[in-house]
Length: 137
Image (cartoon, helix red, strand yellow):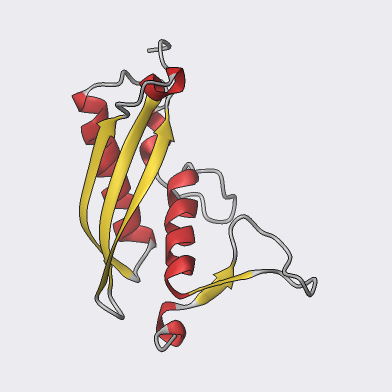
C-alpha cells in the first residue's frame, strides 16, 4: 500500500498475536478504522495519562432513545473524531435508533460516519452501534 507511511501502522485492536507470536499490526485503512473505534469506545477520563481522550457519547448511556439523544450522539462523535483522528476528514455523522426487530435493538443507536482519508482522498463509511440501557432514563 503506497500510503502506509502516511496513514500509519499500529497495534491491532483488540490486541492479539500474529502467527509468529508478535503483536499483530493494523495497517493503512484498517488502522484508521480501528483508531476510530478506540476513540468512540473510550469514555473521557478512562485513560489516566490522557484524561481528555475519548468520546462523550458515553454520557448518553441512560438517555431516552429520541431525536435529542441522536443529535447529541452525532455532535459528540463529530467532536471526538475531529479532535483525536487527524488522518481523516469527517463528512457526515448520522445517528438513528436501530429499526431491527430484536429486543436489544430498542436500546441501540446506529451511528453512520462518512469520512475521507486525507492522505489518499479515499471516502469510507463506518457504522458504529452504540448500546444504551433502555428503560433506565
